[in-house]
Image (cartoon, rainbow over all chains, first blue to last red; front, side):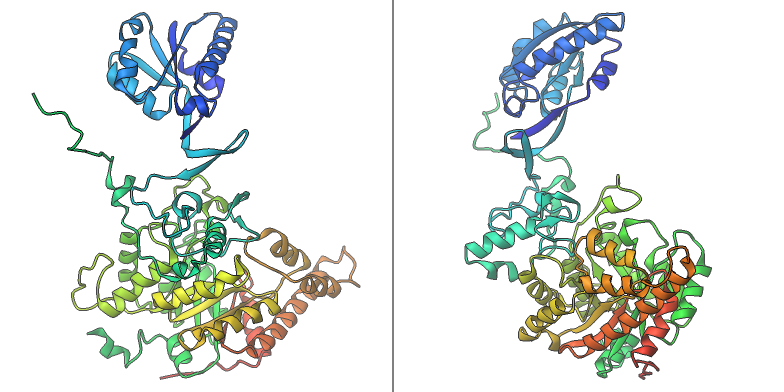
Length: 225
Length: 328
């Protein structure tokens, strides 16, 4: 899932300074699951902002709505009429959600209430970890299902750097060394020989380096009228 | 092609000649200043001249901005010393690296050490973006491709042949997973490394075990391995490296020996303690060099005495490695 975190309240308050009627829009998908921008968080943030802006003298009217998916036209189109009543939209969707709203409603000010962090999973209650960087050319078959692009601080493709010690990354004692994990996994699979092959420089064109990415599936496209 | 001028050598550097002739090589290290002051380089160079076969120039070492390794290397060439420029994958992509390698060669540099690079979070610009377009092993491949195939990484031919470097890579016998380390070295050899310089050794039994595995793989016959040593400056320095530096192991014995050196000197006598530590550090390092020389597969030593270049000559002399060979 896409994992996000709410921005500090002070920063959100500052963004909303010039607006008097704001609709807080949550998203029912990833950010609901990671407890950052679902219906519940929308409610809590809206009340907090109501109180905070009241204390500041001018109250901001905050309404709340949570759509099932902020990143698809069909779920946000029904908001169109309702939006007419607001000066601004505070999106608690991920960066994709914010942009989907902004793109669909170009006349409206759409503001981000979250910082979108990464694609990952909750490894335990209250802890989320990054797993994928969407490089666009998956190599997980070579590395035992552990991604060195997302999980090695230096994106190394041929083994650990000199800073790997006691299974930890040199950057932080909280971060496992991805190559230690890869070594252990491939060892338990009896496939260490795969790690002995030299991996040549990666073709980053499939990643962000190739420019903004787009997928076209002709088999799925609707015929032109 | 340009290999005519290298007389059968890959790059014809002094380091390559010394190693090829079977001499026990000695390399040193010089940290460029955090300024544009060329005089710093010249002063340090004078301390190293004649004591080592070639000198590493660190590349934004510990992710702190310093004079570039290539520029500092050119200053060394002008002083009549031989540089080994370090090149990390942290700060440059493959375009910038290849451009810099062409420039380095044009300016008379013949050795390059290909490194991953410390993470920028350790340095003075922790908010910087890092690159890691290629890893250190892939950089070795690229430098070899430039030299042996005369081709850029993209496959395009270099008119008149590519730049010729004696190619180095690093090995850390003290990093984990330990079992992977000899194989990672094997991969660097397969990628095209001509010489290896290791991390600082303060745990000789572990280094010995590493070298045994390296020799069992036959790697010492394909690559020249220079063991990394460095004199300790104080008990505190030993403890710091033991406890704080990722990827280092310092046996307690070294801390104890350094502590013992100042046991009878009162804490107030700072000068006395510093001098006693320096003497002990140099003595200890000479002992290490002698022990390491006996380990099969070791082709030389790499002395890292950053900000203590004065220690290098007494070390090399004390280890019986002077004068340095002159090879035509």
